[in-house]
Image 1 (cartoon, rainbow over the protein chains, first blue to last red):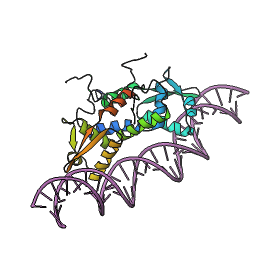
Image 2 (image 1 turned 60 degrees about the vertical axis):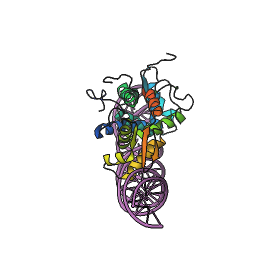
Image 3 (image 1 turned 45 degrees about the vertical axis):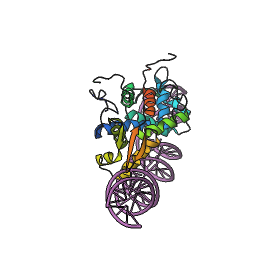
Image 4 (image 1 turned 120 degrees about the vertical axis):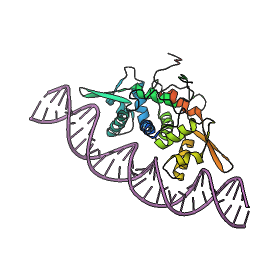
Length: 117
Length: 117
DNA sequence: AGTCTGTATTGACGTTCGTTGATGCAAGGT
DNA sequence: ACCTTGCATCAACGAACGTCAATACAGACT
């Protein structure tokens, strides 16, 4: 979703009035970003040197229960922003930059790379 | 909020783990973008040639009641994304690009203008 | 003054969201 | 086999959200 086969090429906010289905797709991702806990989780993963973070490092960083953190990570994953893998006892998460970059391009009002000017 | 006095300079998602208060500010704006109706409204305003759109042009574009549209416009305004002015009988809305551009910079994972590398 | 049009606000309703305790599952260590 | 640890899922609750009908407000025109 959101970017299959040249969807990311479609212009940003300011080039056309934005149809229903594309608005719905984008809204899903923005909704996933619309929570401070999820933003901190995403940033915590994105800013990590190796690119991967174990859940066991994220959970104690919040005053929240472990199921709550797990739930937020699931929402971020369903939004296509992160992915994870189990390695032994631990589960590691990393960022999928594709959707993030498309979102950034969508929000940019001043068209930097004007294709058709 | 979100950008008073050199806040926009602070790096994006991937430069540091993102503190509580900044995460809360960003989450408010992303939450405002996390609804398809609001995204369409914002895009409708941003893509307009003159930069201004009358409410009377936006309301009939949706299968929603007039109070609902008014409510969504209010949320977008409270998020600092748009502003409005009454001119005679009609009210006109326009986009405030500042917050949008800061959001785009925040989401960009590939640092284009690496200050400290 | 009165009326009409355009927009915002209020109050209410059903739905979704964020959170938790309890439970389940996977893998490692005895 | 058994227990222990790390993480996910379930069921339930209160809070917030999206929507609408009804109402209020602002301006223009008689």
